[in-house]
Length: 349
Image 1 (cartoon, rainbow, N blue to C red):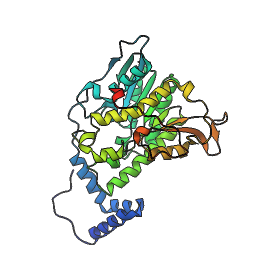
Image 2 (cartoon, one colour):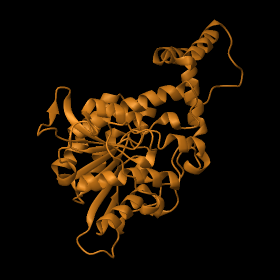
Image 3 (cartoon, rainbow, N blue to C red):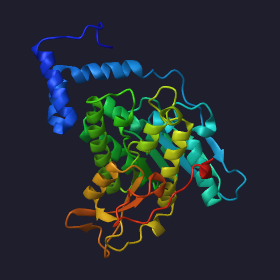
Image 4 (spheres, rainbow, N blue to C red):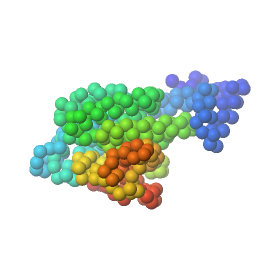
């Protein structure tokens, strides 16, 4: 699917495309980038990226089972749904998968056994989540963790359609009494094989989908955690360590850091009565649309529904609570934002 041959095309059309690419590089934004696409530059980049990123060769390790069996009491049941990032593609040991990391952390924090079922499938898009949910409901889950969105971007699924499929499964799970935590669309602009200006468009599309997912999931009664660029600065600084061999999926350490971001929200969701008490205005409280936009820009931000003075909604819509994790970089937390707490990677192992 690469660009045919190695000869660089010439002529007025190509010169115009290169001129537009330069304009996009200095900040003319999405309009210029969209024009580049019409000239074929983005198409060529997309083909090169697909050729560079290897296809999946083997399924990720199975991680189903009971974690913390030594603890007393009835096991909590957790299901993991979504795509390759939920399945743990890119690692080779069961304990390195996101499901195993979350189940281990949840068991240790609650001092209870956790029964884990993974239904996530490599390559899944939002449209197939309903099939995973149908199987998951047979397990009568207490909490579901969903990671989805990256393949919707690469397949150019319309955002509205992808979000509609997601919110349908969130409502189905909530109607069954299951708490739902969604890790929103990762920032594909952080993927090394994707070059500018395609990288800038991928980042924009990813953030738009993540913000839309946040609004829809919270409205449906779920919780969200923005995975964004998965600790972008560290991934950019140490790509060989944080990415798997294919330079697309996280490595074992990358998954551990993502799981560390998700675990506090899973714990909060399971203790929803205590966590959803009305906070004071200004302490991490925004309208839901504002919260969604802020979360999409800052990885590790939790968004959940809340009340202000006994009311679910304000002039700009539903109230939402933001929580930022210091784990993702202290210094980026707004002064008006909530207090931070930060689990460690070691605490999940």
